[in-house]
Amino acid sequence: MDLELSGGEKKILLHGARETLEAKLEKREPTYLPPTALLEDCCHGVFVTLRGPSGDLRGCIGNLSGRGKALCGLVREMALASAFEDPRFPPLRKDEIKSLSIEISVLSEFEEADAGDVVPGKHGILIRRGYQSGLLLPQVATEQGWGREQFLSHGCLKAGLPAESWRQKDTAIFVFTALVFHE
Image (cartoon, rainbow, N blue to C red):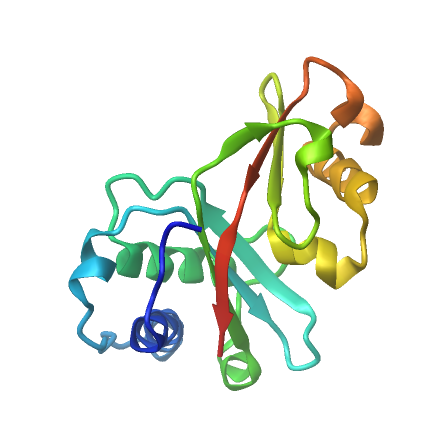
């Protein structure tokens, strides 16, 4: 990962994500902590993952490149998308916000790789064939206890491809790392 954030910068991003959600649910203008120059200029992809009180997934949406967007603004956008636009879940309700935990994953650049180069727990993967693609964050393999082949197979399934598609030459595999932090 080529980006390093201080503890204070991580706090600013986490506060921004939570404040964005609380303000929307309370129908008020958000009040943000002032961002550092790095958070205003940084153009990295980011995912915001929301979890319920027992750690169950409640929403996860991201932007792969962040090109042209400040990291602090992109985190806020992805927090809203995770809470209100993830098609797997109903929109976030006001009574859920206090028990919600927020995790932010700031992505490195993507690099094309061979299947044997994938290190579960270190790398995230993007599987792509034609117009189909699926992404899994690095922490997913660890959370699920998957080895390399399981991780690649689940990446294919997420892309809507057969599980063994990663073995085929016309399937591209990209790896990335992520700076992951949470409340």
